[in-house]
Image (cartoon, rainbow, N blue to C red):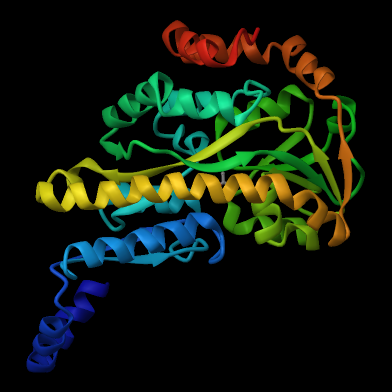
Length: 333
Ligand code: X2X
């Protein structure tokens, strides 16, 4: 539809359009989209990268930023990326697993004890394995994964303190088989909903709870519609910076290099921002009125074990991927 409009406008006012194009000077104009708020580091750092890319290419490469699910929910944006309507997009590996099944491996419940284990794995062989799987799907993931964080459970109805409290709990999860499976293993009633609709689904009580890192709970104003927060750290989640090979392979290599360099740098800075947010926001969320529970996570993990969750996913991911995971996390099951 947009192309048609441009075409018509060009017929009517060709000289003006030519002048604008020339003054503007960008030879390549691309879009980067995400699901995150304007002030979230996943928007802020790629915006800086876009500025650095424009500067280094003397304005030849322009990347416009579309945060906050402006272009649609995550699963819509993934479809746009694949069809070529969108050039760059950051997505949780767990949601990406609807296309690349093994991409969700980092999301196994209670696998990671700390970031010290996460980064060497994702920057090393586990991340390389997943990027290889992504490559097979026709997409391309930049080397450095961005951080989302360790996820915590929130609720509007009751504090979640034990694995039993999750029984029958209507919890929103992102659109991803691993997420649904994990909360089914807790005997919860998981609802798959894109982030774009989470606030309203909690407000209207379609779901009673959700789970996310502290940064998104704060910047997404989830505290306005949720009362209780349990520090479960049940999963580590990131965002792959994705493009499609069909698009990417057509770019001149100097352009590719500049983009990749600045995006990978943005990822490293974004990780630092996220670390600061995710380790400092608990007291702020308390001030905002949330009731915080520190929970013993061992029984949660035992519940996943007895429900057969680890066994099932070990088989699904297969021995190669599982061995790479356990090399970094230690034995999981
Ligand atoms: O959808 C979510 O919960 C979020 C914001 O954490 C992701 O992007 C996976």
